[in-house]
Image (tube, rainbow, N blue to C red; front, side, top):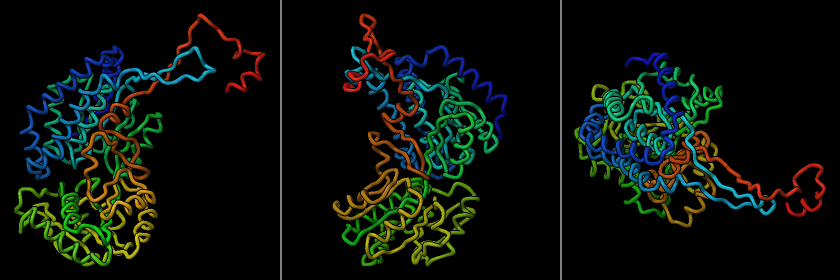
Length: 458
């Protein structure tokens, strides 16, 4: 994929600044119209989007719709429905010592946003933040991942035919283009990717004091307790782990199973894999492929430690790794030192819940946390841990509720989006005090003649 020259990036940025300065994007009718245009182009090109996702990642049309297209369409509908309400000035109380002034918050667009998307959900994770940018009244420069070139090319075409480049533009390229983009002054950088690159983004943004939203990842734990419903746990762990062949930032990264149920649970997980994908997973049209050779090499290297309980097949030509459970994993193993991002599930055991909690709390805060067991214990687990999001007796489903803010904490990210949060994250909450002139109370002025009275009021 060719890199985008810096001259083109600067030209696009300057044209968007000029267009934003016309204040057209601040009009609510304008924003709703753009959201409707985006919805129309997605609906009209569903087949092409599905074909592109199949070509780059071997995603079935069903998975492409459920995890990418439907999420974008639902998000657009949510913003169209609520935008007028969200954008209205919000009256807030005014303390007595400021009266008869009134106070309100007005929501104004930040300006020009840069949205950098990853390859694992290349359509959804570019268009979903874009919805928030449009909704808030921003202009946007979009940067898709070069690792899913078919999807990137299609999105470039869709954006170009739907929006003028002085409003929304898409640029392609790899690391060099990213570096050139991060050098520019944007009003917000929205980045989805790894913590490693997230640090690069934040460092570059600091030079311009540009605010950032970092949607990162990490090692999201899954605990299955002795009193869990093992059939349900196995089914839901397989679903969350193997969607997109495990290349999901909120996939259960590793499993802590109570020693008394571990063997039974692992057998049930194997059973659910066969039930969902058939006896030969490689032949299943529902099982995606690893994105590239570099990822294949990295994942294959993680199979060298511990005991392979099931799976372990690697086919570099097909970019296929079978669903794999690794037992007898030790905390110092390589697989426990990095986010897996593949269909490999390392397993550790525990006797008391303090053991997994201590391990989890001694490491970086994860993007997601999954617990299978009774609700009373779940409350204790949540109270004594931290993560960006969590599910009790399920995996990954918190991402499907646009009423829930989505994002990380600490090493797994900063900032939230989805639904109303997407509108807010691209907006400036501007505080306004309106003071009348028909009265001018003298107490606030030097030489503070009524100071003792003021002290009692405040």
